[in-house]
Length: 121
Image (cartoon, rainbow, N blue to C red):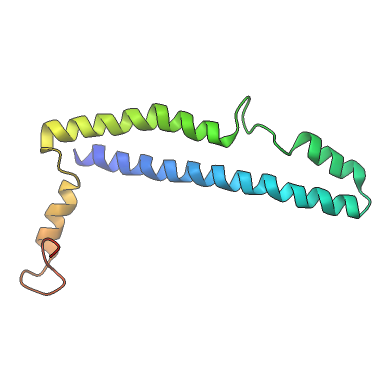
């Protein structure tokens, strides 16, 4: 269970990076509007027009913008991975998450010491 949970945590990080790629790519695409404007103002019309024609709004992979990559990842690999981990956790650990960390916390905390309570409240 520990390795499966650790693998899921890695997939969660991958998903975060994918969302970062999505947001950063969109930000760069909007920055191109300003670049085009500045090239136009500087009299570099051919460069500005090429950027408008070839880069602004371009697919990042054939037929897809980044939001489509995110959606496909979420609806496919990510959903299946989470379900597999949930099923294994339900069957083998009564649905409890972070078993290793819970055991580690219990071993490492100072019993009876403020700030080292086993549970909130």
